[in-house]
Length: 86
Image (cartoon, rainbow, N blue to C red):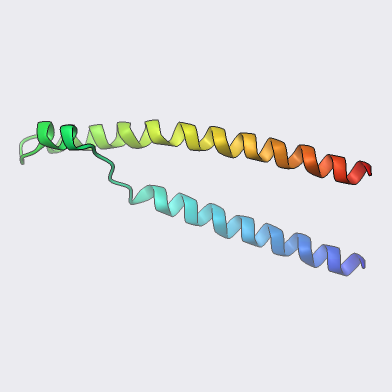
């Protein structure tokens, strides 16, 4: 029984680690830009400005996802504590 729990915990840690790496790598290749921003920043002369706008958009997108992740984790932790108490 003890070894089964230990294997499940190590498997869970491995899966969490792989998921974290995948989420990190997805964020690296993101190029977000709305149609209005693309039209305003189009052309070869605005390359630095366009990159800055893309970085700002990605930064603003990350905050809601982090909030959902944190709230989900807190709910998971709350339910797991209730299971252990019963």
